[in-house]
Amino acid sequence: MRQRGITEEEVGYCLINYDVSYTDPTGNAIYRAKTPSGRRIKVVVKAGSVDPQVIITVADLKGGE
Image (cartoon, rainbow, N blue to C red; front, side, top):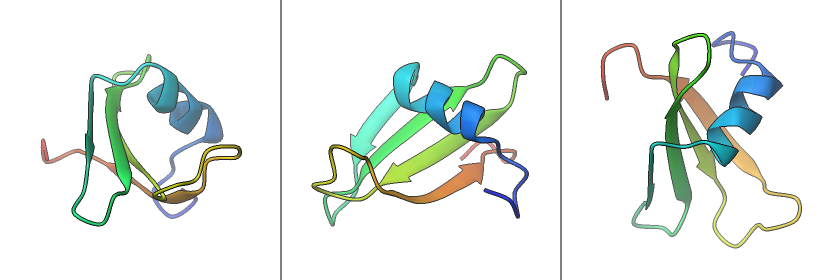
């Protein structure tokens, strides 16, 4: 998050207000959203983690991934 300049607020927003969600081949949940600031991000949550959710990575989708 720090390397990509993505805030905790943006991650939280994505997890609640996602546009697209799907599961990768290993079972990790992937959420994609456009934040209120207009930034498109992707958040990957470790398979099976519920409370708390374990965030594996976040990415800025500048290229429209």
